[in-house]
Length: 262
Image (tube, rainbow, N blue to C red):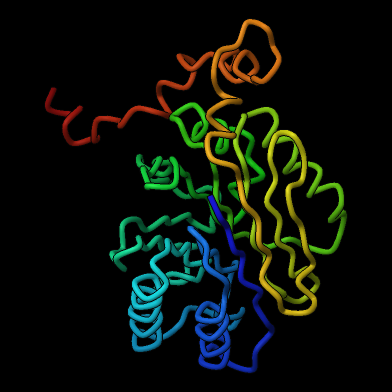
């Protein structure tokens, strides 16, 4: 699986940020997944309807032209209350929209942590602060995700410790993590691809270049296989998580209206 994480910029307007991002994606080397950073249109708020539509259509077109999956970074929802990430397939179809409420007390969608089958592997997606909640990555892993794509902001404070924490999440949950943080006030333009074995690639992206990394075919599957010699596997650590404890989180709950009439 080849991954390219595109570098963002602090732009004067959402339109100029989109112009930069569109060109950067077009110029990126060939990869299976092109990943845009968090808040790639800037911090000015939710983009207008016309710009949002242009971005969605533009990313779909780029996915077709480059024959790749595009993880569409993150942007604010129209109501300004959610972090939204799009996933486009190689044909430019919008196959998943990941939506996380900014208010941590807000009720969440039952299908918050889906695993998506792609021709390059089984993937999951997180955005916003969900990556820092241990259970989020664990649920995706228990459902079979091999790589988790994470457009999220990384502040400058304790950045090294946070990157080390991402490695810890990858190890504890036997997944690869592709992290994409665009530049913002008080933050880093950081990109990394982290495996349970360590940091595969990382960059501050200060020069605006994409971060390129390749996960060998079958590498994550090998780590997830049961191996009684303990030579190549993290299987026991993963499945000691006791999947049955996560039933209420992994299974779709019955809507309240249906429960009332049961």
